[in-house]
Length: 158
Ligand code: HEC
Image (cartoon, rainbow, N blue to C red; front, side, top):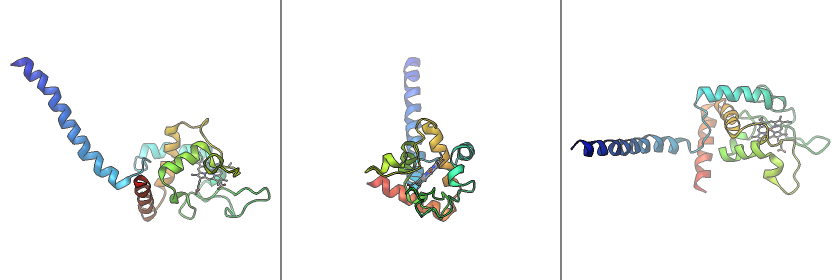
């Protein structure tokens, strides 16, 4: 009897674990749809440091963007937009924000579009890119977060 009980034990535990995981992750995903861990204080703190080191010089230390950010400069480039709710960062689903930060705007838009927003592929790891974007999202007020969650859900259905 003993060997049979031992064989059944781990299988039962796996089953229970699988059930528990479905039960806990499914509603969380339905709620968020995106993948940015903006509720995780440790990741957000890490992201804030990355933001200060790599992004604030253009996007502003209060995420306010550059002055006149909607007007192209003399060379035809757009200035850096704010990442606060007055900009349009929150219009983009997580995956797009990630791709923009990793590959840069020129690679994403194509067609010879020129932009000062370079890709951070060689500078930041994927986890660091995710962390800095999680920090940005964590600064938004609840209503903007709610809209952004919906944008993520809509993007997930495409
Ligand atoms: C050299 C200045 C500069 C730095 C540094 C910089 N950006 Fe940008 N970023 C820009 C500019 C300029 C744009 C808008 C470009 C355009 O639309 O042509 C932009 C756009 C973006 C966008 C798209 C926003 C939107 O609403 O479409 C994201 C996301 C972004 N940057 C994230 C980051 C992150 C994250 C960092 C730091 C890791 C960073 N940027 C560092 C200049 C910069």
